[in-house]
Image (cartoon, rainbow, N blue to C red; front, side, top):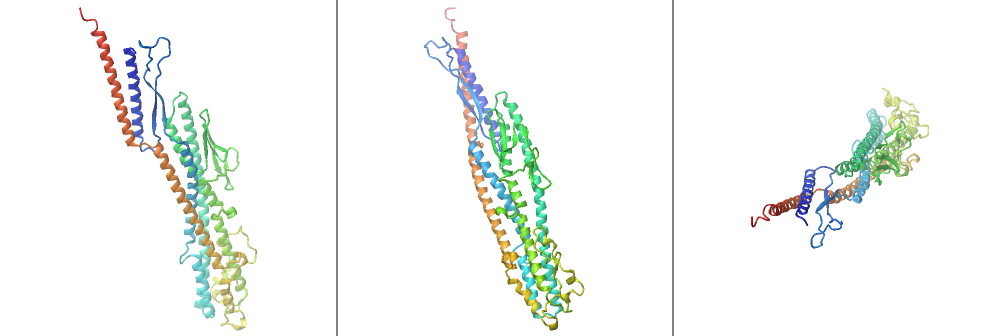
Length: 482
């Protein structure tokens, strides 16, 4: 090995140690940067030349120092895919738990203003009417309890309807968010492609893209892959959302369906926040998916059947003024069959005849006009409706149907909460596993910094030693005898 070759070897060590120190500093600087992946310098020795005659006087070849092979990210793609796979389920169950919790708050059970309490108050007032059918005070109580019952149906229905509109807005907002992620990822794809044309690896740009993909994975189910040419693609159910530098957007059409803007075909997410929102917006009980429409339809069914059977009995009785055929509830024709497209809970109200100035006299407690004013037989028949199984309520009574509805809602909400917590734990654990591999450890980086610093100093010392050797050869050899 020549003296100048020694200088060259030390120089490569100097430059590589400096680059390693720079990468270590970059890691430390980004220790708290979201989505940042730890980078390492891959080094390799420079092989000795194989040209004939390039050996030292002992016939032994010596390497030419060290070189940087790559500056790569420490990242586990399996954990990345696992995180995104579980993150989409977390997004779905979080959304469902939030919406179902809101529905529970709307029904407000158990409470003094919930449907079971209001129904109980209404039938209790009828019980008092049967004891004192000629009392106007008791009749006024019956009318007020009927008004409270109708108001409860109206209020709950309106809140559910408002929740439906809120879901429409939220779905549009989430679609816009997904489109925004797609646009940003496609732009990063272009930047990464242009940067890597030079043979470099755009580690930091790739970190930004991976962070966006992680965030997108919570909104909708996605699959990602990168081909041999570096083209990065994101699919939703086999349809490209991002392909290289092209983003394919989606929107909501006039019928409320989520469609691809380019083809007009429907987007059918299988999980993620968007899936949860769509289930809660359109779930009518089909295939076990129960969203706001399901609870609205059940609420309408209860309102219709209460009005129908009470009107049937009430219209056959007689008021204090001897009138008959009066309906207690109005807002819709209870003689017509149930129509699931009508908002009975929104329409139900106390009949205007009962609300009139002489309406108290028309509350039908008597079964026979000749037995007035003390006849209470019709009031007793109204009370008996409370425990009567109804075909329109799947052979359930008013109370049983209402309790079953609230109980089913509670079960659905509890399941969503449990699934959300399970997914949250799973996603957190996977992310901790990712961070243990990809995250920056300041202790480890400080150790690397000292290692590369010592290496740099040692290489510099080799150069100093070589310089002394050259100085000896040039300035001191051959001086004897002058």
